[in-house]
Length: 427
Image 1: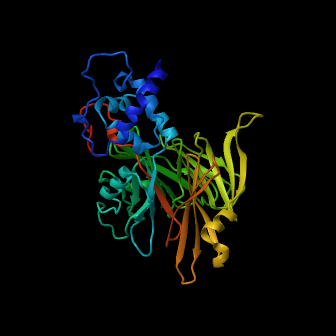
Image 2: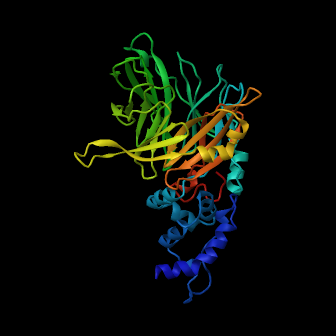
């Protein structure tokens, strides 16, 4: 019976969803019928479960936004079911809107949007603060540390008194965090320095976030976590890691509630639990420095190593022998032919270097950079799917090949529990 209702009502619903724009006044739009009940199945016969089954078949997040803002009952169907939102995100991740990267001598990152035809994404880009104008001035500019769930995390580059800002370009909201407490360096050796910051947030709670800060004195590491709910830093203990503690600068990656920091020359990485600040270690296959730590589409910890335009993939899984976690090799993929076809490297007779930018939800984002004949750096940015093995060119620009990717986040109006605020309003 449910499938019959879906088939009968889907055409009219599709028309309604497609014709709705980002500025639709849902408070003036109703999905109730004033005509006498009839035996015919119409769009008004759909239950919330039916609506959610149809919504899952929409192609992307912007389409869901249009459909949900059509009327209160449709918006309520999205708001009232966290399992639905989880399923939709798994099937349709937020679209990539553009890249933050460093261009020339600019002291702050620049944003390059991807060419998009969807009107919601276009409007969001035109109305958002993607030039980061709401940031306060900083003598050294702002260094971009992380992008996640609509937030951009930046720090002022000051070693002695680092300041961090979390900014949402879509809403123009900017939170300048309190300075990292001075006691962060207490108890360490003389040379204590900060190696990076990471953002911990959830699309189910778009109004709150946490920030992790990691510092080292070359023999030990220490972590601190800031909470937007308490507006305070919590500092963990120093943990001796041995050796020279050659943890990579600005290389932390958040996976499953833990931040992983690979070493420069040692085949291991530091793991910091963001909830407990416990520090542990994870061994690595003996590969080179050009690796990316991330997760598969199923949420499994993985690493991708690039060597001479060849990608090597490992996934962390329990051993069949004793159940201990080990790295299981998955595939070895050569991208040389495809990259050469796109960049014309062999025709231009220039040398390229391949860099892994991030590995997230089964997508490997990477760049290839060359020095042009006029002495400038030029880079191409790609997305590679570990599932479909498809390589997609995102854009190219005169830059150094380092970038942070910004994806469209869920509008807060789609996850609010109340039914009276934000309906039909632009977010």
